[in-house]
Picture (cartoon, rainbow, N blue to C red):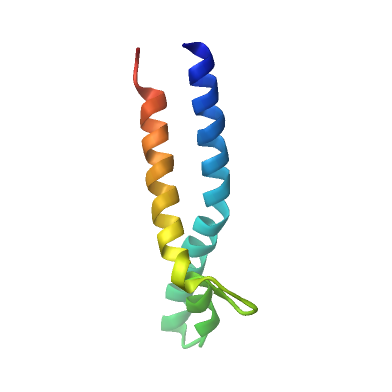
Length: 85
């Protein structure tokens, strides 16, 4: 049973690490855009980053779906790790 928990933890860590960078980009770009807008700074590129358009690489069709699924899987796997046997 302990081996199963170890495998679950490894999977949880990988999924969380994979989704952490895009989530951080989304969070920070949203925060900075909302700070800059009232100051009159036109930082439209932050909205592009916020939605997954990184210039050369445009992930907009998949970015929200990826973030949502990765977040749900991370939450579900985290909850399953918290359950007691």
